[in-house]
Image (cartoon, rainbow, N blue to C red; front, top):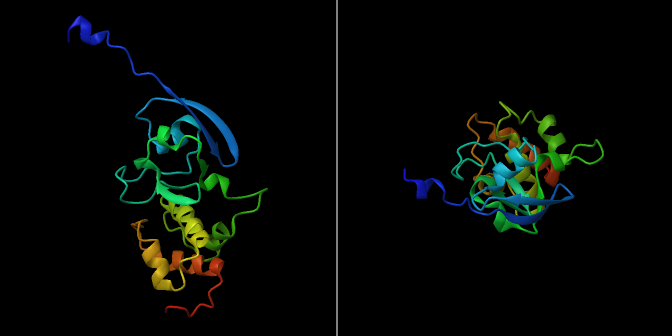
Amino acid sequence: MSASQSSAPLPETISITLTVNGEARQLDVLPWTVLLDLLRDHLGLTGTKKGCDHGQCGACTVIVDGRRINSCMAFAAMKDGAHITTVEGLAKGGDLHPLQQAFIDHDAFQCGYCTPGQICSGVALIEEGRARTRDEIRELMSGNICRCGAYTNIVDAIEQVIGFDGEAGR
């Protein structure tokens, strides 16, 4: 490495503002910082998991402006001004989000590694209001790959919160 290569200036950080779990945050990030790393490494919100790191497993799913996204595939700088909800932001005042409680009720955790992403995806799915059957829930949750076969219990938990009668789409 030549002397001119070693003295190359580092890229400047970018100033962004995010509202994370209801709290406004002013952050300086390097241009290549992905949202997942920002949440976990800079803000200490370790509930969001790094799974495949290629946007294929859904373990890193968070809710951004009401939409679920794979946080490993989003540059933090591109989300300037966004409202982000992680699994840590779902419970209110010590009360679990209804879907968090439904996951407990239906033993939908299995190993638990993908659970935060599953719950964030499920919460956004419920808010979208598009699922009317078990098959639609499965289809709309297909971006979250559970490696341990808990889909049935996860679908049961989502059905409970939606208020299905238990027979729809079976």
